[in-house]
Image 1 (cartoon, rainbow over the protein chains, first blue to last red):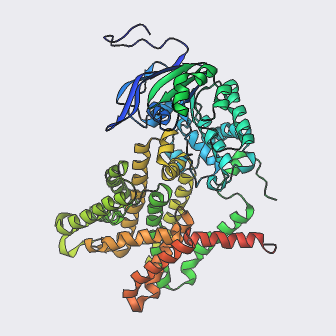
Image 2: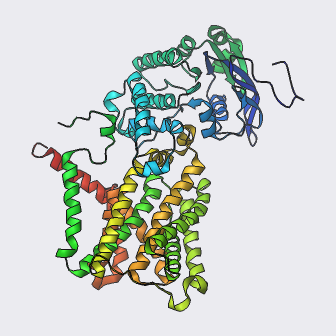
Image 3: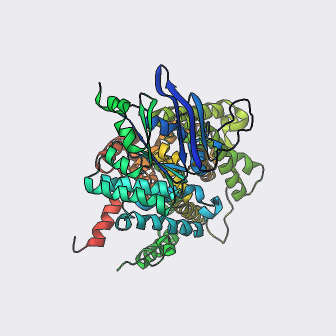
Length: 264
Length: 326
């Protein structure tokens, strides 16, 4: 971007820039959660955001998805500003996310959880719903079944999510996010709390999402080995400030990153 | 062997032949009832039918959308008095009924606005305030409530050569069947899923593209429509309404019916309605004991059977499905 300030109609981001975060700041009263964070994600790439606990990774996600309103700064997605948009609007524009501590619809079935993900693609017809016209339902069910097949959820599609083990719940949440057909997928610690085997499976899925659904991925992850394997680039945050950016091996060796994780 | 061969089949209302046969038997039994039962019981069944509609509406709000409301008595009163006035002005029964529901639904949207900010007990208190306010308005505003003498509503003139009670029974049961089907259809559609999503996690619902404002207000509107219709049907049965009928106890009774019948269950709503109507009849000689019965039952239900009477029914059904192998 060469044009700054003073220009009313900001030119659209150069092609290839899917998401652009500029000078993003967020504070709650006296606490600064994010300070002048900037990053760009190119279409098709996987970017990992790392940093110790409380460094502002999830706050960044919440700003992008519209759950928090940043104190200052700009977030542009495919040339459109996301500031001040409600979360459901952001999702309609093509951003989906998962949560660090799982936010599933616990009393619904696995299938219904995915169907909620399809909600924004439904042709809404209230009268049709009352009269049990179900062609839309069937159309979206097909899409959900594709995701069910992709994530190996066939056996439990009618099971209540609350009854499923943790690893499965993580998969359901990933599936629900995929069901919204996003352009950009925000994954908040997708493999935390999983066994080594499950982590490998998840790494495969995240890799496949890029190829099969051509979705750009923004990843927050504590497992640095896995994150380095999956991500093209890496950004490190500490105390809400970006301290490093670049290829994964560089960022992991960066003195500020080592200091943030290990201390002096 | 229970094989589902297509998605459409999977979405059918009554999928298995056994379910269909049972449903048909139930409908036949409902049709036969006024010819075999004493008139008093026919009247009681009519009351259960109209009450079930209100409880279903309340259940859509509490059970499916997770928004606790204690303001139902207000919607009941609004529905009943809108219906009463329209009937007095000469509107036909069905027109007045739909209009009464519509007016209550509008009030529901207004009351729904606090739900965009308030959750759980705070919302319950805000809606309780609405119920009390409506009650006071009707008590003190004689133009609306018809003053001390209340509103007198003309009786329905029975058709098809039926007696008054039987005609009323058939009409109300038919309405209940209609509302039940509509509720089933609604909760299994995208609307119902959006409601349940809001109940289970409003943040996740929002992030998955559910517009919280729209669907919370829609839940209030639908629920209030049901309650308004309940109020109107009640007014028609009583033939005479005054504001004192729609006090807070009535809202509590609806709430009790939802909890005891089964949260988030259509069948449970009907069972719950039957419970809150029949218990006072059974304890007719010790009326002052009724609130105690409600209280104790709620405690028992919440501790031992959180799904209410409907949960009991599910367990009984499972037992028979597995019988004799268990």
